[in-house]
Image (cartoon, rainbow, N blue to C red; front, top):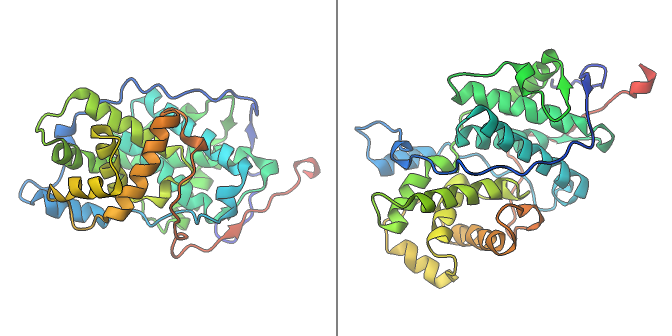
Length: 307
């Protein structure tokens, strides 16, 4: 895809621009954290966590990026992530798969400029992202036509073309750590329970899912999100000082920065106060750096009426 422009004639679709944005059903948010740690049995968990930290994605959007402040893009991203979460539930994918899809989406979209006249391109990118993530993580991968929902139908070759563009843009680095790889450690550490209550696990997962819809989610590393979500579920009234005390009372990994955790914790507190299911209107105070090594390039489109 490098050096190419995408035209509507190349990416044929039929779409319903007024497809209703469904609320994600989160009844299945209690996961078995006893199986979340999948490292080598001979490796200490702390070493394994450090290895995971090395697989965390670079930060995504810059706080001043037009993609972040533009209301059209915020709405388009919210719709895309909501669709990804709903599709995850439809096919019974792991939460890790949905989060990977979001990482691919944010990293790819932050290297492009999308003409708002072709809003369906955002939908096409989201289909390609969850298709790639499911190939990475799932045993049974649906065929591409099975992903065509919400009144949108894309040709398989169009999705495959965007998949190749994503692979190229991400330099074929597709294996990233997500918060779900860390939550076992942090829930058990901060709750001081070997078998935390089901509700504690479920609420932690719901916070992570809610934050995915927030446009600054890529400003926070997955390990930071997992730590902050675990803390806010256990105690949602911590101050900067009490949070530091809480973290210092356990042996937290050295790659975590308390200030980063507190910023993310503060954002999650806002989500809790406003509406756990509607995080899109919450703005993060933190600033993030641009994706390293990826040069912004504009996608150009031909006028479909001239084809």
